[in-house]
Image (cartoon, helix red, strand yellow):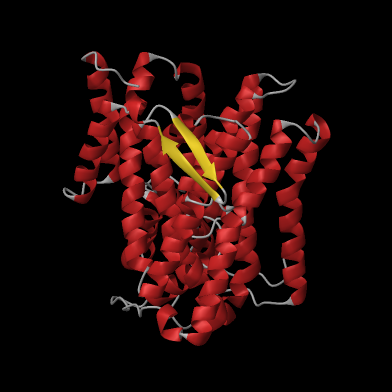
Length: 454
């Protein structure tokens, strides 16, 4: 292919082996996934320099979608060209996709049994604590100025009290960030990162190994990417009808793929609201359990949309067998969610230096990142209410639309496990997998002891 690098920085077989090993360690959300790549690629193998790695990460943070997977595509592209990016990005999501597909099928088949109910009775409180931890972690990194704190609070109130659409909140935050960057630039100035020591990396911080940008290359990449992205959705619409659940899911999750700024937690509130309240694909409890499954498998957390799609198509299969519909929906949703990540990186990476020094764009994205803290806080509230209470309703008056729990439907076991999970996360600082395993075990113990689970 013209414009592609003529040699690999590392042998492709060696790179594939490294990416496969990385893919098996991608637990713990984006922070853990980025840490695995940092340790493997920067510190141990010295394939890429620290500042080059951070430069790539900063670019990926500007984009919608899972930044850790996009970072893998970007570094794979630097190391082995387009084929390296495709391999790295695919391997990054493949183990999690297969694991969650199996778990989705198990959940549908056995979700009503006492054993599975007990496991999820323990996992749901753990998810509440994990999302609360995400609020704190993202907030510490993003909210560097009182003006950014105000943006986060405004985003939370816009969603929790006024039920504004998620894309509207993102657009408003971007505009606010741009205004702050223009008139009060100190509020959105990024922190400086310290460079790491060590022997010279194969890809230094100053010399890049990449394809040169060009109009022809960009148009070819865009055309092929859009065709691959849209083709399965068009095929589903032709064979199942434009009103089928598969077509609806293909269009819906294609849309969410381009508004997932700030990580999966930021868009999950929007996905949960639409999937539960608008489309009725699954219940709020199902959504919390799906997130617990996604948290316990490798790969990007946004993979939970695969679970949502599986349940939605299984419940509304149309003329298809429910199991066939569920599997097709799962694969289609995974495709339309992650193909844009490859397109964004392979199309935009040659221009990354220009984007890096674009101050207005950086300011706008700083505003979005700040608002994401409020979005995640709203997600934590949503999950907490549906975990701690069996019954909820939406109270509305004028512009207000507030989710209100029924005090008489409180779940004592969920309250106790949530308090315990918060202590384990914030006081004892337990890792995520240990927390999930412990809470699941406690849910099973409660079932054996005859304690009501719901």
